[in-house]
Image 1: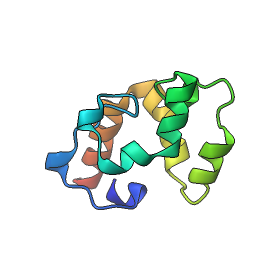
Image 2: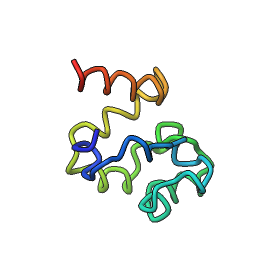
Image 3: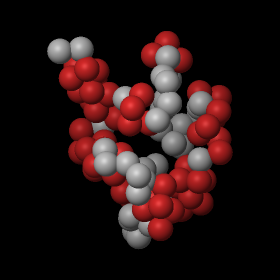
Image 4: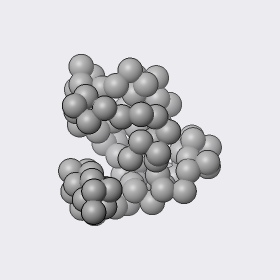
Length: 93
């Protein structure tokens, strides 16, 4: 998952409850995220709920990523916890 996000992740610090989760549990970078700010303005919990998904902000932000745009629909389908569990299982096979 570190490669997908482009930053080192300390698993003991991973307490993500999603972009609209409690701010006290967010990573510093999340407070600055344009996609999170957009989601708050639009009143959605996840980008795929937005009527104009994928919006221009999303397209620009993830234009360099192959996996992130594919993960959002998977999160909607199976949930974030299951996606993380699946990724961890794949990593430690």
